[in-house]
Structures are given as C-alpha cells and as structure tokens.
Length: 454
Image (cartoon, rainbow, N blue to C red; front, side, top):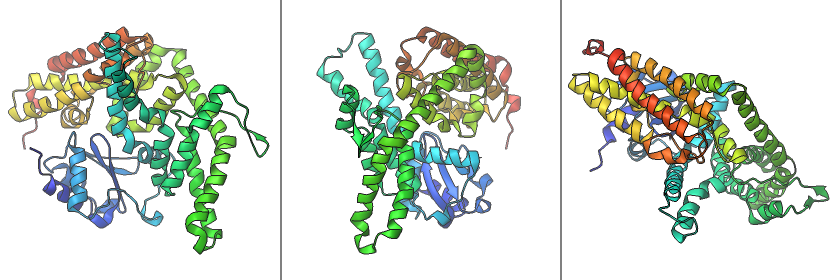
C-alpha cells in the first residue's frame, strides 16, 4: 500500500517559506530541487528534522531536500496538496539569477534532470539485453530483441528531440517550435543524406553534413538561439499575425542556421571536449582515474554530479561508450559497503534499521544519497573510508580501460552494461570497493560510542 506523504509535502513547503517563495521545483533520483525567491525565508533545520527527510543540501543556487527513493511520490503529492507548480514555469523576474559556474550547473540541471529517469530505465533494459545476448539467451535477429532494443534505444537515438523540449522549458521558448528544431536534426532525409554523403546546399551555401543522432550540444545551443530569435520576431511582427508568423519565421531561420553554422561548430566543440577528456585520462589513466574517483563522493555530496551528464552523453555520441561515469561508478559500491559495515557493527536498533534500508538500495540500484547522508557522512569515518576506496577502485577501472556502452547508474543490477573492454578489471574494482569499504568500516570506521543520543 502506498504511503501518504500529504503532511510531509505540506511541512516541506511551509518550511521553505511557503508556496509564494517557490520560484521553481523539479526532482532528480533522490532530491527535491527548489529554487527559492528568498533563501532567508527557508528553515533548513526544521526541514532536516521532518520524518521522511534525510538532509538538506544547498548547491548551485538550489535548495535541495534529500528524500531518497520516494522523492517522486513526495514531489507528486506537493503538486496535489499545495499550489506549487510542478512545471517550474515562472516569469524571468521571479527566478533568482545565478552567475558563472552556478548558472552553468543550474542550466545543465534544468535541461537534463527531467529526462534522467527515462534514461536510466532505458539503460537498465539495454544492460539486460547485453547480458541476454552475451549468454545466448536471446538472438539479436529475433523480433523480441528488435522491439526491446528499439524501446531502449529510442531516447538515445532521438536525444536531440528530448533535449530540445527540456531546453525550451529552461530558455522559455515555444516547446513545439523547439521540437521542430530537434526533430529536423534527426529527420530521415538528413540522416540519409549524411549516410550517403550527399552534397547539400542551402541557397547556394554548402552544408557540412554531420550525424546528429544521439548528439547533445547542437540541440541545446540551437534552442538557446531560438529563444533569442523568437523574442526578436515577437517584437516586430504585428500582434494579429504573431501566433503563426513568429513560429514560421523562427523555423525558417533557426533550422537552416543550425545546419549551416550551429550544428557543425558545436559538433566540433563536442568532439574537442571528448578528445580533451580522453587526452587527460591518457596521460596517466591510473592516477587520473584515482584522483577523479577520490573526489567524486564530494561532488555527489553537493549534488553537482549531474552537471557532468553532458560530458558523458557526449562521450557516447562521439565514441559509443563512456569511461567517466564508469571510473566513478564503483563509488556507489563504496557507499553501500561502508553503510553495510555500520549495519553489521552497530547494536543500536534504530541505526541498524536506517543503515540496512540505505545499504540495500545503494547496492542494488546505485541510489546512494540515503547511505551518504543518513549514515556515512553522519559518522564521518565511513564516508572517508568510502572516498579512499572510491579512489582505489577508480584507479583500477581507469587502468583497465573499462567503459559503459549505455547510460546507467552503477549498481549490481546494471553490471552487464559494462561488458566489453576492461570488464574484468571493473568487476574487481567493484568488489574491492564494496568489500573493502564494508570490512574497513566494520573494523576501524565505526563504533556505537559515535552515536549521539537525543
């Protein structure tokens, strides 16, 4: 039976300063991500003490309430029992403006967070298909495989369309015109022209043909340009013609501009970004992987890990595989293992229940926030131990050259997604991460004297 989150939803909104103080609200795998009009109206301590809230994190201009596995239910309930819009659509003057790195992370979060659930689900299906075909359970020529693969691969193949919609929300432009921009990039005519190397021109100007399937940057930048162009045309077109003429003018200017300039330039930048990342890693993969994985738990701590999603997706588009989230993936097992160590060591019934309920989803699904905030960080040593073993596992993973063939969170259920180059090394890294963190935490990282009784 589903739990009733009505009171929790009301209490959260009350303590963030009320409905009128919420500029926007979205959620990711474990967090409610608020943008507040006035941060001083929010009572962080009161929210952290609510039953059902793990902790509160403030990062990248967001007031993030960590809920855990039930965040989607709480998010939905907020929309049902309060006046908070779940679309996050507010006027420009109501939204606090970030600067520099904060603005970049806010933008990335707003564009990529809404689609991550579908991404992870599709990635899990792909992982199963990899396992099924590797073990000869399923023939790649069978109808079953074809349908399941199409279902799982659709969001990756037509990624520019998905990004055009979420980017339109962020940049406050017409979503349906943005859809046209994204869809044009992967239209059969254009993909066929690229495949056959057909020479195309637009008004006599040669078009540099690029494969935009699974691409990331072109659609986002094109929609940003669309948002500026749309405002320009809205000002000069008579109001009586505005409804249909502005979209027409936007389509006829932005899409050709995308194929002529925006697409080729951003495609080059995307490849440059991917080669830059691999070049840094190639200098000394063991040291680089170790350092990246060592600091990764801190990146997760502040909810900034999703800011790296564009790099990961770009790696898939350019290379067909990703190593960044592979190198950092064993951290999930580190957090699960450290939490397990506390569970095995403590004799406190309440802590044992909390640690057990956090360790299991961290191991099976890769959702680590309940383990991090509810247990490991609270007692410090388990978190430090997890960081150390994350660095060790990252070094092993990078040294083995392991990578993922699809976008998934690292967990026991998604290990088949890593089958291929370096898979054995990756498995060894995950075992060391999990067992090492658990044993070390059990022996040296925790004892019941650390528990502060209320």
